[in-house]
Image (tube, rainbow over all chains, first blue to last red; front, side):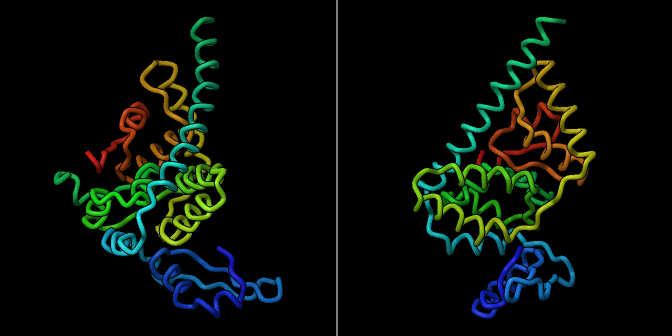
Length: 94
Length: 139
């Protein structure tokens, strides 16, 4: 992920947590140029306990969850219809 | 889900959606897992669903959820062979009428097989059609 030096300075602990627990690298830019990279040392994976603990701070959002699910469903349906057309043509021609 | 408690899982997007919903069964299940891992294809699927949301504030809440929680999980990347193998197993499943898996289902299935993981999903049928071991943590 990318972040500006100003953002990292403001929320250093948040970025450090992402690097340590998420195993992500943060590319830091300064005045629009790549300046530094924060990398995890041991590539530690997020434990289920840590993930659950974080999620318990999240305010449940069924409205947003339903909206994301609907978007995925629509996209999958479109993909299915396309594959259905391809394979039904193949079955007929076999 | 006692029999699967000690195994390593890779989460499908529908499980991340349950986390966003605040589903307590999903949260309790996460708590029992040693590691939480997703895949690049899962990131794509969740984000593509979020970006389709027309209501700006709802979309922003979903993107915030992704960046604050999902993006912190370790994510497995897909190799070129994953795409080739996914194309084969998805094509075979459709041809033989075993299911209607999507490209993401195929990619996640081959990744799970390559890394020795089990797919945690609500959509067991399409993953089983791809030959992947899959469980529904909410069942």
